[in-house]
Image (cartoon, rainbow, N blue to C red; front, side, top):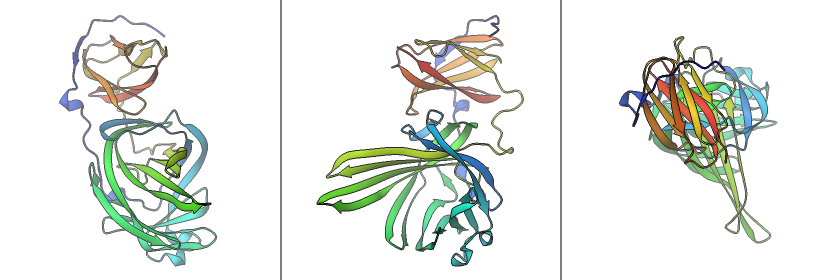
Length: 327
């Protein structure tokens, strides 16, 4: 790495108001529609995901178990379409079942049913999204299909930045729901499953850019098993650009470190350096007045060993960098 001349910076605790992320709004124009396709990575071992404004969700530490090509198509192109005459789009992966038939109608995204070997038609469609949707939007919906019925409540409980293998996306909205996934009695013992589902939407992409499913199983009231799986988009559409040509350049060293990091910034102006822990919580923020070839020392020494994410914001763009603190 080439080292450049450096100048002392003026540091101040706090985040300039201009650096705050605006609350994203997911409009009806962002609803699923035929013609969209993208690879999605299937993930195992996702971390707990934070709620609230200006969150950071780093999914790069999860294990990728496979990749599937999502396709949104005209409903009539899929097997079993005659069972879902009101569908406006069908979603499937790798040109194989299951085929999920959806309807975008009256500001709602409705699941009408699923086609596998036989059709499973909802007698009461599940409303999994409403438009427009923004932070703190909430709705409750009842649904029913053969063998199951229930009610789900949804809450858009966070917005911020999603970090995945394809890069980072700002202005992402997280919608959370929790519901019973298992309710049975085996040999006198009651088994209950609770699913916490997070779905991440980004304007300009007509499908959730990531999902997280945290399933916990209890026997007689005691937790006996849990698993966190999900998916994340593997390639960003060409129209989604996070950085301009004059985007800042960020260098971080040493990494991993025992706490003291050096950040090299290449453009003048006001910077905001924010550190998030593995849960996406804001650990601290530095306001930085920099000049070209500026060096910013950042001391992570007081923090517990582990993985952190640095968000560096400038008027020309936003960059992210993972940082590891060792004992």
